[in-house]
Length: 276
Image 1 (cartoon, one colour):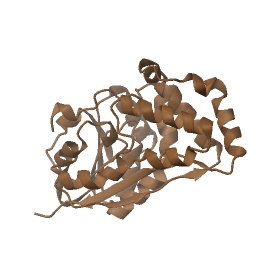
Image 2 (tube, helix red, strand yellow):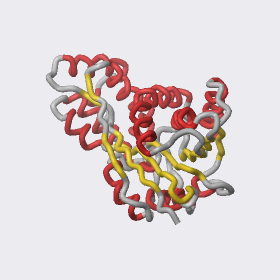
Image 3 (tube, one colour):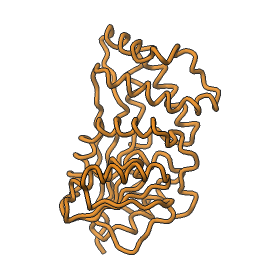
C-alpha cells in the first residue's frame, strides 16, 4: 500500500460535533452492519482488523461479535478520533479492542487477521482496489473481508418528488464528489474485490426508509458538518433556506407527501480469501 491510498482530504473533519454525529449515525446503521458481519462468519475468538475506525463504532460492534476470546485492532490516522474511540472502549468495559494511529500505508503486519472490515471508508480513497489488495495480505488464507459502502443513486431517485429533500440530498452528494469521495461506490465493490484478487463477494443492499424525525435530522447534521466544504466549492446552499428551520421544513414536506424518505443505503460485500 502506498501513501496515495491515504484519504487526501476528509470532508467531514474531526470536530466534537462530527464525533457525536458519527455515533448517532452508527446507531442507525449498526443492525445492518451486524447482519453483514454475521453473514460473513465473523464470530467468537477471531482477530479482526477495522480500517478507518473513526470514533470506534465498527470496532465496538466487532468486539461484541468476537467476544473476550477474540481481538479487534482499529486503524485510524486522526488522534482526536482515536482518543474518543479509546474512551468509549473503556466506558464499555471492553478489553479486547485496541487502536493504532497510522495511515493505511503503515498498518502493522506482525500477525495475521481472521477478518478485515470497514464501513464508509473505501469511498474516501483514491484507489480502493489497491487498499483491498493490501489489506487482504494481512488476512489469513480462508479469512474474510467485509465492507459496507454507500449507494446514493436510489436515495436521489426516491427523494426526487420532494423538492426540499431532493435539494438537500443533491447538495450533499455533490459536495462528497468534489471532496474526492465516491458516494456510489457500493455496487462497484464486486468488481473491486475481483480486481484485488479476491473472489466475487456476496452482496446485499439495505435501505432504511420511513417518515420518522431521524431522517431529517441526519440530513441537517451532515449539511452542518459539510458547510465549510459547501462554501469552499461555491455550491448553492441558499435554496435550502435557513438551516435552523431545515429539520422542521423537511418533516413538513415529508408529512404531506405520499413518499417516504431514507438514509443513504449501504451496500455490504464480503468474500473469503482464497486458501493457499
